[in-house]
Image 1 (cartoon, rainbow, N blue to C red):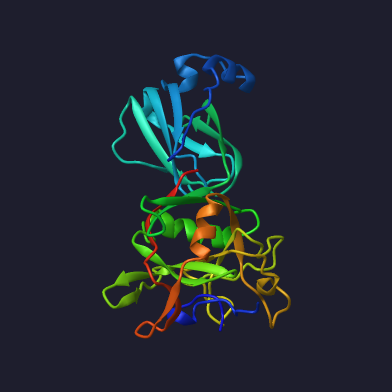
Image 2 (cartoon, one colour):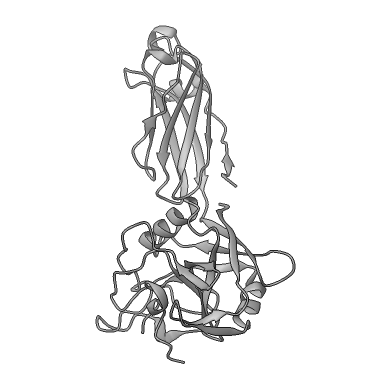
Length: 305
């Protein structure tokens, strides 16, 4: 049987903060001079941008760009040179403040620009998008909650990363459990909640994604990957963490396509090691064969970068 999918058949073949990011606003006079323009209200169309801020500069999330100044009701617009989706204006702006949003789709530097209705550049802001990280808080391993953090790789596995972040930021993983722990193989979560009788399937809310197993990423110890059924393009919400090197789960051919790795644990690997060693049982009602005897529940999954 293969890695993850609904119920117990979703597993691999067992073959042995919103972060605040502000940058210095380019002075208006300097910017206009570099563009060959002047600084009069006539040239600016009566629009002046005094401050320009960007918040929630995180991959896969909506970045918010705020302008403060005067005359902003006379036709100001904002663009991002690249690395962001369509920029849309948020309702409720006036002559003194305006706010715009776009979904961040790339890592590294982004250049944000404000223009008047005549396409004169009024202000410019540079921000930097870090590699995304997700921290999970779990209960059930120790008396106190345990945490681990994974860093994701949207360059190698953008489809898997975007899918995982959508589930994280929608709060889907809250109260789900690690429903499959195969010692010295994988620990798997993201598809079940605890019930009085054992475990209840929690179906993914987004369409299944394309398999991204032909990358430079490998199923080595500490990596996180998408679980799926025997159908290659079937991964939804379930994921697993390799607790040993598992080359058998890597891509080999079209008939043996493997499983898509999309990040790795960067802190709290000791937590995963403890999870790897918990006693498990067979749950006849759900069909799960490696369900921890004591529930290990995800209390929160938060994108921290």
